Image (cartoon, rainbow, N blue to C red; front, side):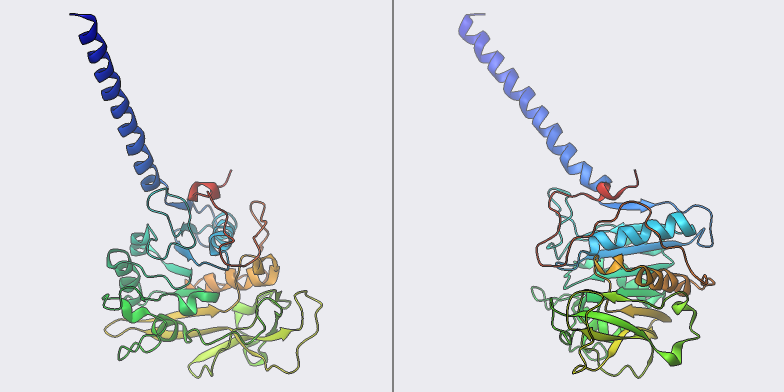
Amino acid sequence: MNKGKKIGMLFLLVVVCGFAGCSGATAERERQPEAEQWVTYQGEEGPGKGKNIVFVSGDEEYRSEEALPMLAQILAKRFGFTCTVLFSIDSLTGEIDANEQSNIPGLEKLESADLMVIFTRFRELPPHQMRYIDAYLKAGKPVIGLRTSTHAFHYKKNPGDPYAKYDFQSSVPGWEQGFGKIVLGETWVSHHGDHGKEGTRGVNNETAAANPILNGVSDIWVPTDVYTVGPLEDAEVLIYGQSTSGMTADAPINEDKEALPVAWTRNYVLEGGKSGKAFTTTMGASIDLLNEDLRRLLINACFWAVDQPIPEKADVAFISPYQPTMFGFDSFKKGSFPADYRLK
């Protein structure tokens, strides 16, 4: 074989091997997100042993991707629930992308869930994912909704989608104002407080004082503002929110604004489905959950949702260090993956 042919064959071998290596690397990058698109905390001993909770995160502003893993860790390690947290995922990189509105992998885990905790905003999930939420709700299983879950879905790109009825602005007969109104009791209306300038002081509803969801809950202040919520005739209001004229816990109450519901329970039923129960709070941003009593309220709500006795004062201390990001658009931590939320 002459020298030219040898060089040519060597070049071809390098190209082929390099292509194979690159293909293998590409395949590995593609496989890796499939393997780790969510995080699960296995339940240990405790009252929640044998119960599965699925947390669905996905909002652009309030850092649900930080808040829900923290709550899931507490429920798993202190109370025995097995908790899986789902995220909005960039399908190409596998990174958590709060701005990705159409991809939350792992929703099939709702098939074996005893409780869904949802904290999404304006998601437009495809039918192959959304069908698991729809089936879960038709089964009448319990739901806990945080903050923007009142406007959890928005089908602006595909108004003809079979699940567009979940849109917060839905006009489909029987589904007016979508998931928020039909399941949780209210959709998005407006900011009642001055967003970014006023916080929320929680005031327990005296007529609901005996409700065990309020066990150990007496001092809530959070930096997110009060949402406008209309009359809740079919719900039990647990906490009202007063607007504070400032973004600190000692800020005075804005007396010019009425107190509005910020936490309540109700029953829901989808057409052709079974009756279920829902707990909703318009608080819950990741930074809100520095407040111990708000964390306790949510942990208590999880016990209530799965029909377990609620502790007199649940231990809601953090399991791993918790340093939440201040709310704001596009403020999520870039380059994060679900695996980053594993317990070390």
